Length: 119
Image (cartoon, rainbow, N blue to C red; front, side, top):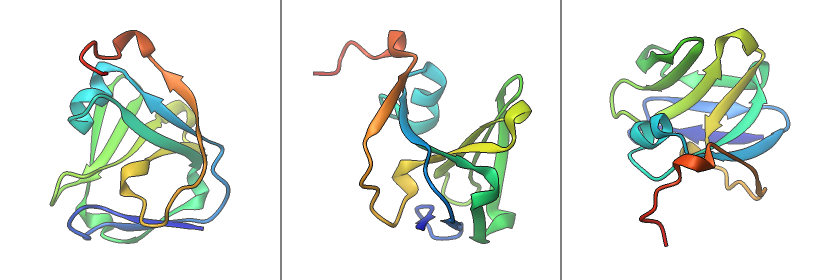
């Protein structure tokens, strides 16, 4: 099991189940959402993600047709990314994990948008 939370602690979650894989997305939307060069996520079954505190603090944003991103409406921490036509799966942001994730990143997405300023 993994646990996680947003920066201010208003939202807390548990993941009860296996992580399918970890990915880094280099798309420009993830760059803007994370304020960083990429967005790191783990992919899990939606039924394995349980919000244990702060459900009312979560704000959702349809960033593109069929895609919804969730973040803490109090502190702005990015929490999830989900394709609505595949609602049985959800990507949870690795940066919000409280339990250390020991797995490896196995997928890189949208590498064509990888910033040239990286070393």
